[in-house]
Image 1 (cartoon, rainbow, N blue to C red):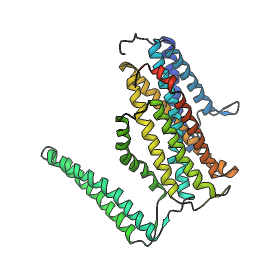
Image 2 (image 1 turned 180 degrees about the horizontal axis):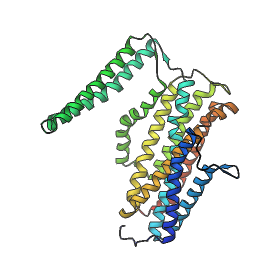
Image 3 (image 1 turned 135 degrees about the vertical axis):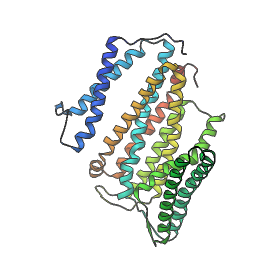
Image 4 (image 1 turned 180 degrees about the vertical axis):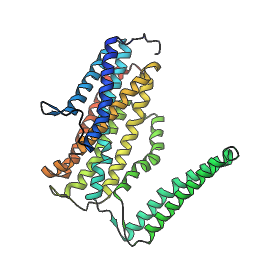
Length: 358
């Protein structure tokens, strides 16, 4: 594949790339600054669009233009494979726009709408689970560090001592935290605690998913992406079911925390089906010399998804006031599921575009 003919950048290409890069960099710096200060670099409106949104849309349009122009100049096989990558990147945008609600609307849901106070058997069960998921990783890391100290202490004695002292302090904080939760009569789970479920489920489920990929049941990339999007939608469906009892415009509620646990479980499964697959296919579908730029395109898709996650998640108050919390989560249920079904139906087309790459 590396023998594909070179496609040098023209002066026009380089000028467009420079404009897009500079505009994107200025926008990235200006966007957070404009929200925390009164300073706005793009202080104008165009047809109802804010200056910031107008500029970034222009830059995105130029980027798409140069991307299409460049792809059209490659050999048919390489062109088809790049189109397949772009289709997968397009799905990635919507995946991360939904998945990253974990840091926004799902945390709001956990904080304001979830019953996080546990007593009796519920508190005992949580204490056991929280102890296991805290102590087990710490014990594994401690074991690895002890083995490492044995091999490197003579050469890096001071560094090892500093690291050991730091880790002992962490152990002290862990023991103090766990002791406090055991002496309290009832526990209130912090809203941010649910965020660790993603890491926990990844560690627990990644070996199982990898075994499926190694077996005869290993599906094509498009099917993996489709299943991942459907699983993501199922996670939000769980939240929609849990939110069904929350009335329109409500500011607080007491929904069972099990719906959040189910959501994180299915979201993590979706991530395991999508995230590693896309990166793997990048290295398979394009020549080695182009991997850098294609990774850039892939991470641009992730960045767009994260930006959309913040923008859409920021509308949670407006949507719940006009409709209800269930409607908000149903948006993230139906769109990923529909895209998942679509990408699975496109499997024969994308197989042809990949030209034998699996």
